[in-house]
Structures are given as structure tokens and as C-alpha cells.
Image 1: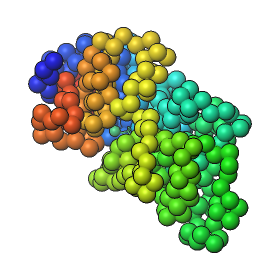
Image 2: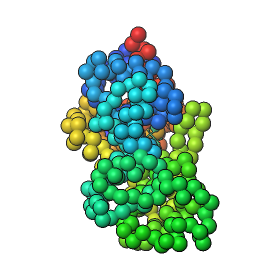
Image 3: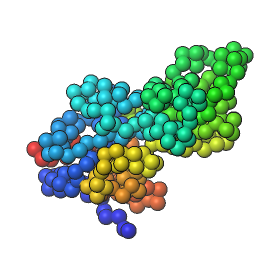
Image 4: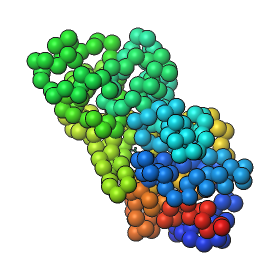
Length: 307
Ligand SMILES: C[C@H](OP(=O)(O)O)C(=O)O
Ligand SMILES: [Mg+2]
């Protein structure tokens, strides 16, 4: 099926056509709604407009640093009311994978985390004990003769490593995570493949860059649970009973968000240029990623062009 040429949302008629085409909007977060602590222009107004029109908003982030509950608090800090069941984070989809696909036994099998608090929190909600992660002893400089994670021996109950974005990544965390990955019976799960992470005025290394270093050292490839993995979309579609043709994925990255929407058979996709991608990339034909159906300078252009 040939892709239609991407339509830029830049006036009233394209904005109205876009809104009228869908009932459900799946929003990526980093690079679409916000850049770190900075809410992007007219995001709040756009979400309010969708609510007024009776449209459904769902939030789908590859960022595993927070749990869904912590994301509710982040939305609230911007004055946006969101319930936990509207949020699907890669910390949650990774915990679902551990529970439903790996079928680890809660209270018996443990998880070693190379990542932030969101992963441990979502695993704990499913009854799993985890070690590593934000344990402050991992902040210490690495010394094989002194690391408590080595001198006390590896935990034999660990059956899975979950790795994600970690702003406190260091050699200690990488070294101990590798010890667990050297055990073939320990599963290797990555929360998301994103090579970079957009912040206001910067692009920083993403989870994929951290996880790739573990893949290189261990010679193993992880299962990635975030976008574009369709397990994540299947979880959303079934729990929300979505009509695919009336659903649109809104993202800032072609090889995760737009691929997720196109491969998931959604009715459409919108690429916004406030995160990772550029207009040239939105328009180029590239075997690496599908083109979006729509694109816009920013999400808020949907609202602004209707005023
Ligand atoms: C950038 C990505 O988050 P998302 O854009 O999926 O919210 C991530 O945190 O790696
Ligand atoms: Mg993003």
C-alpha cells in the first residue's frame, strides 16, 4: 500500500479535518506534550478541546523512569487532570511482559533493574521484588573487591534483567547488570529502544544507548517492550476497546511512535516537530520508517489553527 504524502496541519481546514477523522488520540509524551519540565505551547488547550469534543486521550510513553502513578502527578503539576488508566508507560509494559509473557512467579522470582524508580514501582504493583535500580550503594565508585553486589554474591532468585533510561547510569550499574546477563537463564528485557531523549534545547542519550552498551558487553539482544512493540498497543486496544480506524498516534519519533501507529493499523498518525524529527525527515521516503499521515510544527497547532 503506497503511503499518502504527509499533510501539514497549518490552517483551519487541515486542523478540522484532522480532528474530525478520529475519536481516540494516543499521545507520546516526551517531545510531544513536554520537554522535561517544560510543557509545550497550547498542549493544555488542545487536550481540553479534545475533551470538550468527547474525544478519548490516551498517553503512551517509552519513558520508563516513572510509574503511571508518578506520571499522573507530572500531568497534575501542569494542571492537567489525567487518570492512571489513561497512561501506558514502558515501565508498565515491561512489568506486563514479565508477568504475562515470562510468567515469573511473584514473591519467588526477582528482577535486577538497571533503570529508575518507575520500573521497580510497576513491578511491585504486580508483586515482584526487584533489586538494583535506585539502590544508593550503586552510586558508589565501582570496586570489584568492595561492591556489596559482588562480595555477597549474586542473588540466585534473579530471573530477569529489566534495563531502561537511567540518569544515574555508571560503571557500577553496568558491571553488576552484566554479571546477571552472563547467566543464560536470566531473561534480558529493555524498556525502550529510543537512542536519544529530547530535552529543552538539547538531545541527550536515550534508553536505547544505555541498553545497547549492555547488549554489546553481554553479546545478547533484549526484548524491547515499548513502542513500536505491538504488545504495548495490544494492551491498550484491548483495555480501551479502541476502534483502530478511528484512532491516531501522535508522536515525535518516526522509528518508534509513527511505526507503532502504522504497524498497529491505526487510522492515522501525526508527527510533531518539537522533539527528535525535522520536516525533511517527515517527508522523506525511507525503508527504516513509515511516513506520518499528518505532521505539524507542534501539537498546539491543532488548537491554534481553530481559533
Ligand atoms: C523519549 C522517550 O519517551 P517518549 O517520547 O516515548 O515519551 C524516552 O523517554 O526515551
Ligand atoms: Mg517522544
